Image (cartoon, rainbow, N blue to C red; front, side, top):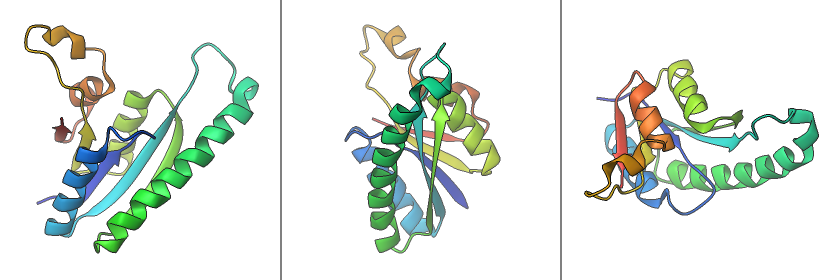
Length: 139
């Protein structure tokens, strides 16, 4: 069904459900996976001013990506990792198009029924709106 799944992750544990879901989908359908981490850029500051800061974040993200990639590879899934700096939603949408992903699997905040507008500014909402391939939001 899917040939390539893009899985954006952050450095926290909030992605656990999305990762389990993506791993199971990929394992069952023999799909290749790209794990993506976007280091959030600081707006209105030249990148050179924060190069050490970005480098530290990139090292931490690389360790996390490699750890998750080992889990996927251990389950027999073909996996690659990708790291970039930018605005997360924009970079996820770009990566999905560039990598020709058939599906993006990412975690999403739970939205309270009485306050549905609280989810409108989230990364997952933006990705769901602007991405051209199917999106699976895991809560």
